[in-house]
Length: 575
Image (cartoon, rainbow, N blue to C red; front, side):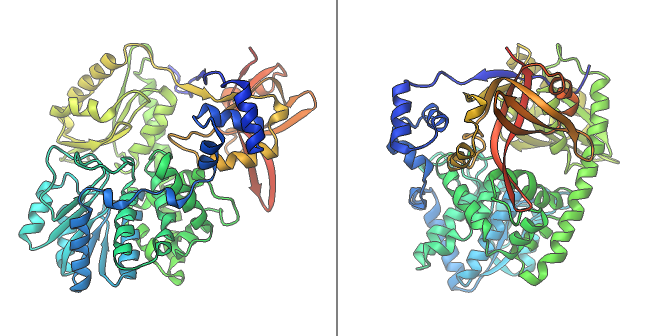
């Protein structure tokens, strides 16, 4: 069995609407015809709808007052501010939790609150509100714990906090259980009684809403809150929330804020990632900024990331240097675990038989196995679970990633008798398990996957539009940017140019994994880059034969120069 990336099936979007409708959009909007076709295919079939989509406004944000529980939450927070009570802001150790804690801390302090920020240590404190956070609240002489991106199932911890004389206000976006914790207030769009229109807020998005409502109640201008949309954008993208509706609006304006951010830590992070002079996209957030911020939470102490987001300019240099060092180490650990996991796969995985992958290894870092699980999903297109075995006695940590159409949390819940605890959502989950229960879990999870995936699953590439290469112009690329930011729910458009030829294909990159080439069709030329495709597609690029090329169209800026580029996502012989 080979674990090289699988060949994807191309799934073409439905036929374009009536040509007369497209022609009307081109005439009214004065936009390139391919973009008008794309807008129509994505549901914007009249000029009014298309303009609203291409030019979203902060006026499109929903009223935070419709969040269930926000009234009692604001009352308790205002009481703490007015009585000069210390508020322990308790985040989580991932990007969303760190950003949410930073947003709360910065805005609450702006409103005169005494705030002690805290995010748990992944290994020492574990996930969620627990003894670590309660102990830190007591040490800070806090009277209120305000959670950010956590707490919705922390029933025992809330009871312990109350026994210690602490009130708890929970703000979270994870799925609640049957009952809510006995907190002073619970704000979560997934509450059964919550009528808030956007159920897909990130944890930082929920925090932004609470602070927006609080700011309005205390006479603070909306702009003071909007300056923190950079944190909301980073968290929304990092937590893989859908970039539709309100989330898309907040992320779009958050990217603008980030370009000139007032947050010294974010400014230092952008510079350290080499993005200071780039037009920032959601891809930069997910692939450059989020991994750096996540690395400290995975391998070290997420508090370093929170410190950076709260730091003044003079203190950012050593903190961002620590993030860079930790991220480099995370990459090395990632590669080592991936290599071992691939060897384990080669020793027993059968693509025709197996519908899921469950691997366990000793010495695997529990903070990194989720990333490696995602990389294995790319290779085998199966729900994948990696389990980090403990060095001695104790429980093992598992992290799982899924494929479209397979609800991971439901399936792990169905195997819950083998687990100590678990949590997550449809695409990603984590759990604790005793080592002697791993074989039973592997069998149960595999059986569940076979029941839900009776046919062998194959990765698909959704193609939006076929266009002649001559229509892949700088103007189209510039106007496409107005349809972003792109991500889940609003995917980056995939164009296909058929019957083109690859010219001057060469291997690039320090590790020789990438291809640079030129696509040619008659007089039309388009520079292209194919990341991680040198081994799998190099022979096609050098064959000289007609090819069908699937690509994202983008303007790439580097060293002050901007050029049009096709970012290839697949190549195959022309049909």
